[in-house]
Image 1 (tube, helix red, strand yellow):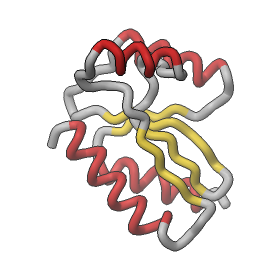
Image 2 (cartoon, rainbow, N blue to C red):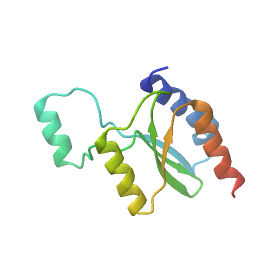
Image 3 (tube, helix red, strand yellow):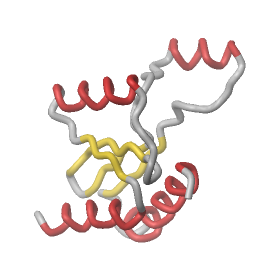
Length: 114
């Protein structure tokens, strides 16, 4: 499974399991990668693009955090590591997830703490 497929499976599971039933839940994609023309890149930078930002932002019943997705063998870029450090310095949860099951465990652990 590649990162896009992982992100799609996580998005669909969370959307269908939580978002449509509970308005305290949100999942947002952060479109940071991909090829784009020069003007689009300039506009994105001028409007807040954060190089290395995590793939997803999750709001789950009062908890908010960023989730970076990687395949089983994927590694973070230097920019992604810098974003993770910034999150930690700002006391914002940042999690690296490699499988749908790992993401599901994360969400269920949040529910167990409530």
